[in-house]
Amino acid sequence: MNCQHKKSATPNKPPIEIRLQVLGAINAVEGRTIRERVKRVSERVFTDFNTQLQYRFTWRTISTWLYRYKKNGLTTMENKTRADKHEHRKV
Image (cartoon, rainbow, N blue to C red):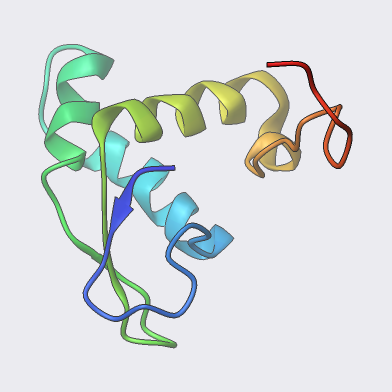
């Protein structure tokens, strides 16, 4: 996941509240297409008010969250782990 923040507690795992805040911002910004709105949202900084961490996400990350949410709701907003995790893989 691509996120940038100023203080580092859990850099690769923004809370679900932040993800929902990002998805809500897509409807609030101006733009003729969803892609335009997603790109505008990717320019914003989102603050977690509990931890004061600030996050910025790439347009591709936001787009992934949006389409996962549209397809299956909140349950798919979490990242999937590999099916072969902890197994040896031939490289």
